Amino acid sequence: MSLAALIAAQRAEHGIPHVVSCRALGVSQAWFYKWRRGDGSPRRQRRKALAATISYLFHKHKQTYGSPRVTADLRDMGWQVSPNTVAALMREQGLVARRKRRRHGTTKPDKSARKAPDLLRRDFSPREAPNVAWVGDLTEIPTDEGKLQLASIIDLHSRRVPGFAMDIHHDAALARAALCMAIAVRGGSVAGVIFHTTKAVNTPGRSSPQPAAPPGSRSRWDEPGRL
Image (cartoon, rainbow, N blue to C red; front, side):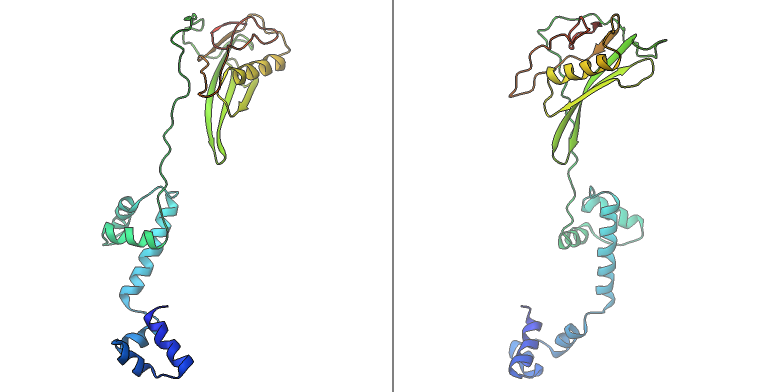
């Protein structure tokens, strides 16, 4: 309970006049009556407006701005305010900037694996017909419930995705599932297709054996080659 609230309670519960309580507690009557009426001073009104503007800027930038960057925006808007004041108002409102997540690459080549020939020669331009050249990749997708791994197959002719698969593990089984789906969507027979992708990578804590060749293919996921 605040001091002013205590003075008000003494009057309501015990009939003690405000002037007596103020004198006994060593506070001015003017301060107490100002508390009862509400502080409508220009300083208080400015602080309320500043707090509202800080909240607006914080959410405008998707909760990623801390007090220094919010202060810079306020000054651009014409406010004369210090970073310490902005930081204090942000703490009062519980506004804490979120840290940006660093993206880490998950595809790392196996240095001990045999180097496969690059049949595409880094040429990813559109092909003249479907099922001539496919490319694949493994991508990490952050979600509110954790990370998901997406394996996708793209036909360079139309840039369509005939096959994909998702799982929580980044391993060869996921890559094989995407390739099996692409082969099935294209009728089960894709002999002669050049398939190029990055090498598969083991996931810590889970073994990632080399994938067996999917039905209708004659190559492994982790090696560019012909299906």
